[in-house]
Length: 236
Image (cartoon, rainbow, N blue to C red; front, side, top):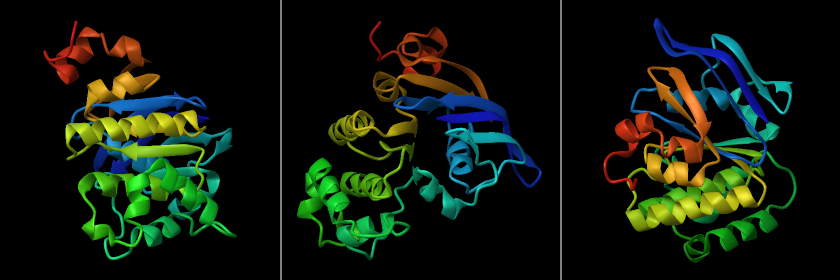
């Protein structure tokens, strides 16, 4: 579904991504792991058109989208849930969902109803302002808003950040359900243990480079990953 080949991203004189290459197959959950500053969020911003690569190529379903503008990506079938959720705080839950479908024509009521089935708490809160939601509810709203565009590929940036462990479990369960319903997922996540238990495959990033990748079940038991990202709390 997605092929990234030798992509380089620069911020002025600073090179943020040094020729990274990876792929995502249809129906997978793939995770990008790495410390702060490794280039994970930059990779997602590149894949949603917010930062065009200086060189390299991005293919989505065989189509070259390397220089596609950000506002066209949702029409291609790619939705991005950024770090920090970025919901519209002065809009209601229902209005936020409608904004997720602004590029689509026709009624969105069926899609909204599906979101209320997946995220029942949003139905209860549908008339409340986004600013009045808890952190977990805001994250659910951000994901639901992205799904309103009917993406085939969903990009998630740190979906567990700042959430209580019980809510994190719920969010990761929902991500699994999204994949099972037919949406491919690429997720950036510092909670490496949770991400690898959910994902099919993973890639490890360091200093703007992908240093290795493997099946998630193999990475979960890889000594390098365990030492740097999982810590001693992970069972042997």
